[in-house]
Image (cartoon, rainbow, N blue to C red; front, side):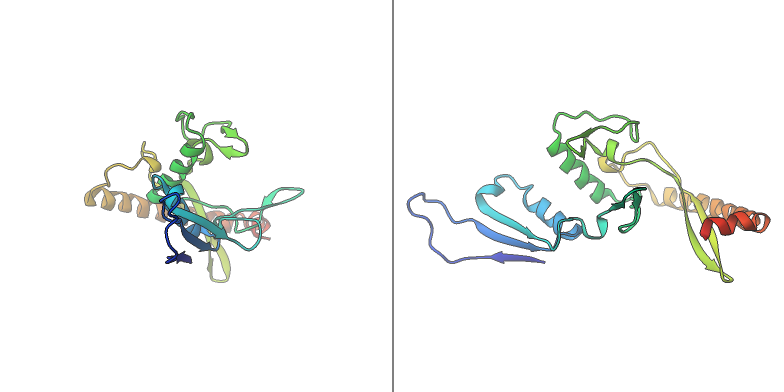
Length: 205
C-alpha cells in the first residue's frame, strides 16, 4: 500500500522551493519494493519526494525473501526461488538495481563460477542467476508422489536485456517440443519409480 501526503502547507518562501511530497509504502514485499525502486528511479526524485518504507521485522522481500537455517544452511524460508525466462520486467529491474550499485561492473558469462560479490551484493544478474533448463515437480497420483520432469527450451538471449518477442509460430513450435519432451519424461519417471521403489521412497521419506 502506498500513502501519499499532499499537504497544503505553504511553500518555503525563504528558499522558494516547494515542500517534498511524503510517500509512505506499507510493507516490504516485492510489489512495495518495486514501487519504491520505480519512484526513486526518476531524475531529481530527492528534491520532490520523501519516501519511507514501513516493514514489520528486519527482512525485506516478502515472498521473495529466502532464509537459511544453521548448521547445514538449508533454505527453509519460502524455499528456492526459480525465475522463469519470461520474467522480463523483474530481470530488467534487478539488473538496473545492480548496475546502479556497481556501475563499473562489466557483463560476463551467465552463471560463471565463482560469481562476483562486492560487500555482500552480486555485481550483476550474470552473477546472481544460474541458468538451469531441467526442472521438476511432484504430483500426487494414485496416492503416490509422481515426478514431473521438464526440459525447457533454451536460447542464447539474456532475459534482462529485452529484445523482440518470438513469433506465434515459434511459440507453437516450442510448445510442441515441450509437450513431446514432457511425455517422454513422464514415462521414464513412472518406469524408474516401478523399478526402484526403495530408492523412490528414500527420496520422499
